[in-house]
Image 1 (cartoon, rainbow, N blue to C red):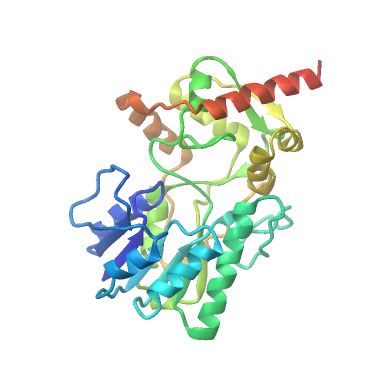
Image 2 (cartoon, helix red, strand yellow):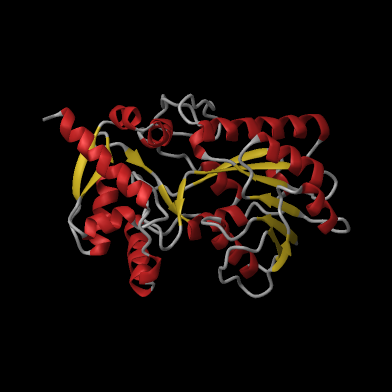
Length: 331
């Protein structure tokens, strides 16, 4: 099977790359070649910029694929490019959407693929919805062979998913320094965190799967944890007890519209996902990495790579400013 990943070296796609190669897939990456990561032997890289469609059209001119996956499409314009470039060139096109597209505020305790899509708080989610709608229309009207995948909060080894980001080391560094950290709301809403190694098993089971054409899948773990427990587990992985300060989500949104969009548009609500569909289409799929294990791996990775413990100054300043504003409001 010949598969093209547009991207392929990111948080989720890198473990999917490893899983695909392990399964014997002939895998190509199309990207700018600017991110230096260790790829498994056998991955063929096509150096090009998907935002320059004429350039990419020349690169893939004589190529056909069984599957094309766009990991980095975020707005409808990106989808229009994909449709132009890959119509007639692939038997399956997979769009990576987001579980944040589901209706907010949440009105269903268990989320399925049939849950209504609506997010008035977060432009990122609204753009993903628009991308889905455009692809569905192309599938219905012209048979463009789509599969839509909706990951929820998915993290790789080295990441620490917190209220304030996942990829950088800002919040873990605050924990280690004994500084207070912010958890939105009362910390008791439930959240779902899926390791990329688990996600990759379910995702790669969809590659070349004829029954998946025209279908939508969410792929998550079945473990749900409160936000307080998430931060306590991160603290335990680092050998500390975090000093948690609860700040209402609305207060955070009023302090920073940028922070508030992701919280009110996603993290503020309890989300538990029904994974019946992906398990039916991909019987081998089962999330087996609990969050405490994933965080132990991340802590061990950072211990071995201390240079990777990057502090994001903007995030650090936002946390300090938010704590000061909250303290002033209650002084």
